[in-house]
Structure formats: structure tokens, C-alpha cells
Length: 313
Image: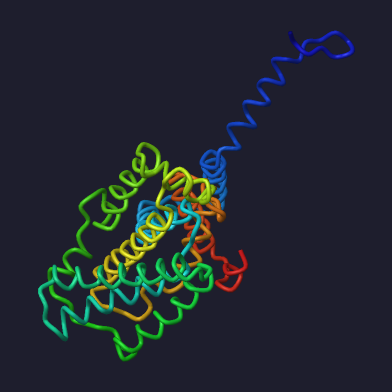
């Protein structure tokens, strides 16, 4: 039976429509996508060059680097933890890989594998300390951030590592998909796989259960510790891959690789609706948040906002 006002009008249809709109915009991805449309229109109105082909490619290239790590961060947050060391892990893995190619003269595939081992190893240490020693992830990964930054200086001596093998530079300069590099291709493929795992598999459901209520998850037989440690290892490996893509793009292992990524990644996925407390959020939402923040950053540059004000914005 419909709801009637004092003058006898039936408002059930209006209320139903309002409820539906609230439910739609309460979904994290929808809210972020709506914000994306508004922000893009705003910057385009101020400066039409914002939607130039060159700028769009630049935005998507940066999104691919940070987004690769955001995939791991989303999975880790779903499991109820987070990692602030990803920027230094990306940089450390990249410079170690670069040194293996140059100073040690290892084959490129072996050097790349070495970089991934570094990233996965750091993730394993983070996971074991957080899960087994019960050290909060904030403290452990923040400490690892500074350790990683120090190790980058030790490995490189404070100088870029170059020249890299031509095959590495070729990967960085290649544009196999709509003028975008291999990093974007990897990002899309990894995002699709990760989204499928989270939404369609038992592993994904167990991850949400682990982050939502780990005590209940334990009671139903889920190995909470294993899921958390595995998520830490995964984000470490993904950070290493992202760092090495940047290394290939620059054709050198520079000490600045990964600088500032830790906050950009976690801010983006949280803006996209992934909960800091675990058990909630989607891959689409997290990656939409990354895109949103990069669009804002690029837009501020295009319209000529002073770099100091950009930090405040």
C-alpha cells in the first residue's frame, strides 16, 4: 500500500525512486565514476588540452605503474592489512635488478626474476612480522619504507644504474596497445584476473571473510595467517614489477623510482571505496580511485596550478 500525504497524494513511487538513487550512489564505484565525469568535464572546460591524446596517454601510463601496486594493495586491504613500504620496495627491486644486469652481467630474465624475489622477500618479511609477531602493519611497513630507502642508496651509491641492455629499453619504449606501453597491458590483465579472483572464487570469499572478521574466519577453518602473509608477498612482487616497468621506461635504475607511491596507492584505493578496516571494497572501486587521483593531479598541471598549491589540493 502506498504512502499518502495529508492531501491524499500517493508518494510511494517518489520514495522508491529516491531509495534507488541512494542505493546506486552508495556503491563506491558509482560514486567515484560520477566524480570522475564531473572532474574531467571541469578540467576540460578550463583547458580543452586536458583531453588531448597526449595527456590521456600520459595519465594512463602513470595509472598503469601505480595501478599495478594498487591491485596488491586492494587485495591486502580486503584481508585487513595494508603496506606503506611499496614505494621503496618498487625502487629497491628496480635498482637491484638493474645492478644484476649491469654490474653482475646476469641475463635479463634472471635479473628481472631477482628483482621480483627482492619484492616478494620484503613482502614475506612484512607478513611474518605482522602476522606472527603481532606488530601492527603501520609500524612494520613504515619502518620497512625507510629501510628500503636506505638500501636503495647502498645498492646504487646514490647514482643511476645504466646503461641497461637494449632489450630492457625496447620494452620501455614499445607501445603495443593504443600507443600505451607493456606496463598498461600488464596492468589490465592483472586487474581482470585479480577482480575475478576476488569476486568469483573461494579464495576471494575467504579473503573478505579474513578481513571482515578474522576470529569468525578462523572458526570456520580459514587459515587467516596464510591469507595475510600471501597478500603481503603478492603486493611485494607487484611493487617490484611496477618498479621494473619504470626502470625500463627510463632505461636506467634511478633512486627516485617509487618515490611517493606509498601514499598515492593507499589514498587512491581508499577513495575508491576499499575499507582501511578490511573485508570491504572491490577491485574496480580501488582502481577507479587511483584513476581519479591521477586525473586531478594531471588536471592541476594542465591548468597551470602552482606546484606548491598542487600538494595542498
